[in-house]
Image 1 (spheres, rainbow, N blue to C red):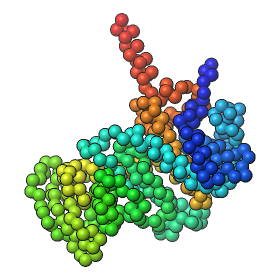
Image 2: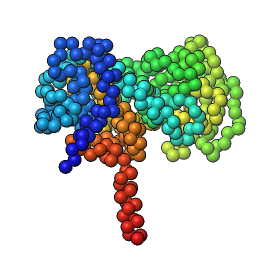
Image 3: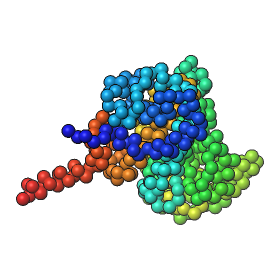
Image 4: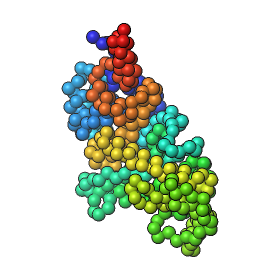
Length: 388
């Protein structure tokens, strides 16, 4: 019989408890708490994300059924649904948000050397977008959305080297996407890729003045004059134009007074003409098109989060509880990404999540569980056996 640690307990070893406690102390999260402290709240919600529990009741029922194993899992005790719900309502969500941002700082550098398809520049490259979670306005009155419905938006700035979020903002559904540009602090020489919802000339000019670059889609109504037109275009690559332009109109010129670049591209696969707007005048026109092509990775990230973590069905109704829920989901993604890197697993984060979701009560060493080395080694041994 394997007397090792449970898989869930092994995962907790990848979480820096001291750093978590720093944020608990900062926001006085354990004030007047006896047994069920913030750490126990975190790991029980983390357990719920790993095992795809649909509600707090599911988490509590599952842990109660395995109450004889909880100590060895690293969980001090199980609690009932109302206790867990009250903790989510009352404990400051910034504890979990700040810890999530700490994990971002820890995990992002681990993937800094990852390659981006068809992109050969060394700059930091980010994709900016948001996803909407539809809600009932009767239950979530603090989160108005469009068309008399409730909604929460999760805004993310995704580092395309490793697909690790570098910035997360949670707002109500009426918060306009372009307002995020006023919150983000641009990194010099970094490239920010975004769709036309983020065309805010004042904010884009701030990115330009900070020494960073952006690649976006122009609005169809954009009024401009061509300053310079490049005729050195290889149409076999899909390029149709490469122009230096200036904006017309008094307000547009005032908000963005410097030249911009307009790259025109034909997408043969989808049979559509595309245009890209950027302030980067140095990279090739094809590089601009390839940069924007990689924006789809943030769409995949949001799709993955919604399909593999419990995020569409929220575990509470208050703003504080919803923020805690979403930040726990982000923390889960980051912890799994850290485990993948540290164990040098060649499995994808999706595959690791699928394995962990059914293995939390196993005692298999994580190295063996999450790497294919042992499987490949067994196959080689069998081949050598038959060859002999």
